[in-house]
Image 1 (cartoon, rainbow, N blue to C red):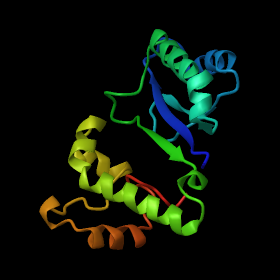
Image 2 (image 1 turned 120 degrees about the horizontal axis):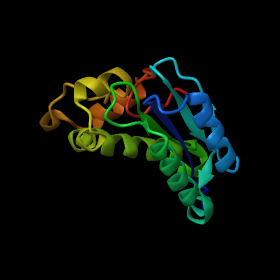
Image 3 (image 1 turned 90 degrees about the vertical axis):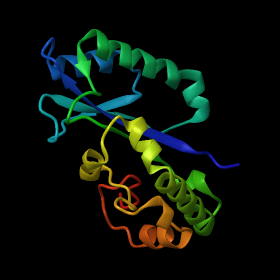
Length: 173
């Protein structure tokens, strides 16, 4: 019933094989308008790749193949994203796909936060980062709180009062 949309931002660094400008031109020629590119001041010698918003149908029909092609091109040209101290990625989720009205969307967002905060140790492991690294750019709201002391009310309070941009789930942009 709702059209859930996503967008991906991926930061990449050059290993000096070709320039960032050359790589962005290669991607531009191969991505059929699915991505745009921006400089990112947090990177040493890299840039950010940003997809246009897409839904699951587009992903299945075209997007998946385009993303695989993009990653292959980056790898072929010696660009890296993981195992760096600078790169990261994040996923945008369109709010309108999370419910029919503000209340439903807020409830969905709260549930997503509850799941992420409850499983922060597992998500940290999946991110291949240490919690101290995540605290700089993608801090969990419950960082420093023992899971045994984590209640739904506590997470709801933290989510409602969250004004941080660099949190695991950023609701401010």
